[in-house]
Amino acid sequence: MAKELRAAGIEVYPFYKIRILMLANRMNYRDHRKIIVVDGEYGFVGGINVDDRYINNGKNKLFWRDTHLMIRGQAVAGLQYVFIGDWNFCSGRRIEFVDRYFPPLVDENGNKPDSLVQIVAGGPDSELAAIMLAYMAAISSARKRLYITTPYFIPNETVMNSIKFAALKGVDVRLLVPGISDSRLVNAASSSNYEELLEVGVRIYRYQKGFVHAKTMVADDNMSVVGTANMDIRSYDLNFEINALVYDRMLNEELAAVFMADLEESIELNLEEWKNRSKVIKFGETLTRLVSPLL
Image (tube, rainbow, N blue to C red; front, top):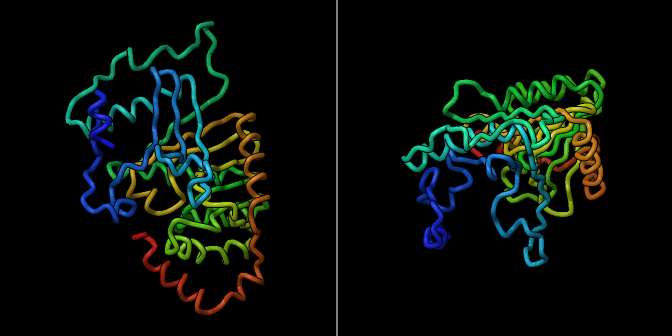
């Protein structure tokens, strides 16, 4: 693919060269960001990779459910800044941070954007665990509802306790995770966390239509998160990730409606039934949890 792109005159550089393809998804310090910036005016960020698997045209074995966000306005500069920094690192060349890559922050009528958007980028090159802290802040701020969708749920103790505390203080906390996953080991490690969440009132749903790959959060009625970061230790510490935090009622309601529609394609876990699953399954989940930071 890279050869074809270069032959067409497109510049292509790897973030890190992958020498063992089987380990591509598990290698450390990989660029997991998905960023598109068009003319410095439109930005795209979310869970969708450039891959035929996401087309859902009936030819693929697995249905992929994902979420991507288009941004216009001031926040695009944040995506542009991160992209240019990554590009300069990968290519060994240098794109200057000049005005033509960062157009004015108002539209042609002089109107400023209606919504506040924060771009949060994180990675192992930063001492500040920005992705984890942003998730924790969003979870802790919820007062009424908290809807989380993530394909990989292996949180650290800080995030886990934040979710539990939200449920204990009366927030309607719901977690949507895959019933069908692209990794049995990761799914098992994720499952090892469910019982203690169910015990404090978190409602957990396993998506059945296909593989839910979206990474979104809906907090109350005016805050939403859409991005590339899973709710796992790898996304907090080992991957280069990027999320958009959007303070907008309209987007919040839209994502909440999509979340509820996804629940129609899901099975809700019952605490007593979950406790009574076989000892062999429990042992396997506990075993994978021990190595979960490596998954």
